[in-house]
Image (cartoon, rainbow, N blue to C red; front, side, top):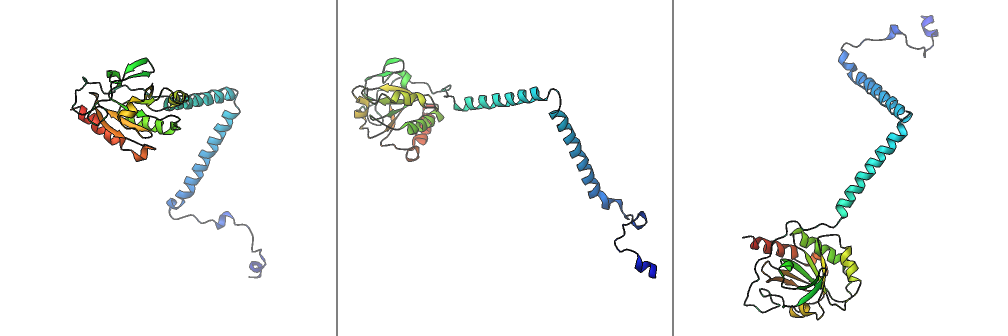
Length: 240
């Protein structure tokens, strides 16, 4: 009895002290953890082997170059100006009873100067379309980009019309637009703006037959215009 009391209390356990579990399944968690640690060790060894291999640097450079090329391709595809592939076709020019410049009527028969030279505003190449009548010195690049995108969503071009004596920077602004397929047109006498009583940036939706479907004046952002809804209705009606 005294010998037991003199034995050190912190003596290490021996195999004689081990107790076997009644059910081996109770060790399943420990076994799974052991195998996970083995897999981690094997992965670490593979990575170290790759990093210290003879062909590691060329492989890494090639992989990085491939990833970079893919990212550049995606960015170019997203940022490149999109073109109209399925735009609605023009119909024969209507002979409406409504006066020129009014909803249901035609735009005045004037000639504009566009990207491809002089063109009649009633020409089939300019319908259907959305005309954005822009005043001189309009700092509205963001607005025009949004409007071009909304027109493009319905497969329609945006025709930006400015006075010929307008801000010469407008050509650069139109070229910088990334949405849709906008074109810049000059109206020397501001005949279109006068005929529709334009105020600020004015939108004129032209149907397939050249008639004015809708006019929206003093547009300052795409949130205060119903352009998309109007264009959807116009395009849907023209398909019937």
